[in-house]
Structure formats: structure tokens, C-alpha cells
Length: 66
Image (cartoon, rainbow, N blue to C red; front, side, top):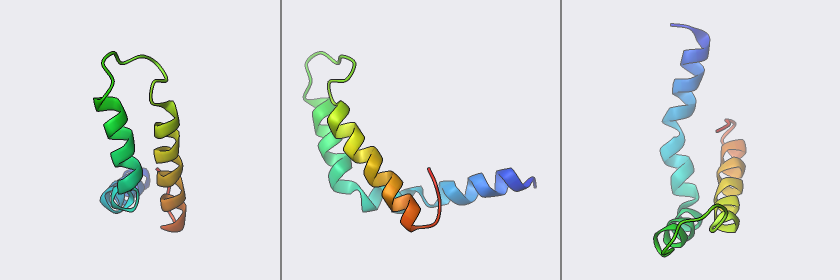
């Protein structure tokens, strides 16, 4: 198997732990998206950015990337 495929699979296996580490941010973002009558660009940008930063921080602490 190619090395890049192995690395990608390794990162993918860590996603459940990354999501679990950011469950509160994910919940806030999901609630924002669900509660919008009309989805427009950047309606939930602040919530998304907080979720994204959490994922990036958690990934860095696990020694991986998203």
C-alpha cells in the first residue's frame, strides 16, 4: 500500500476521537444550522469557526492533522 494512503487511513481512524473531543462545539454548530429558517452563507460562521478551531487543536494534541 502506498505510504500516503496509510497516512490518510491513520488520520481517518482518529476522527471519532477528534469529534468526541469537540462535542460541545459540534452541538452548538449543529443547533445553529438546524434552527435557521433560511440557510445563507455565513449564517453560522462563528459557530463553525469555533468547531473548526477545536478540531485543529485536538488534532495537534493527538499529533495528527485534519
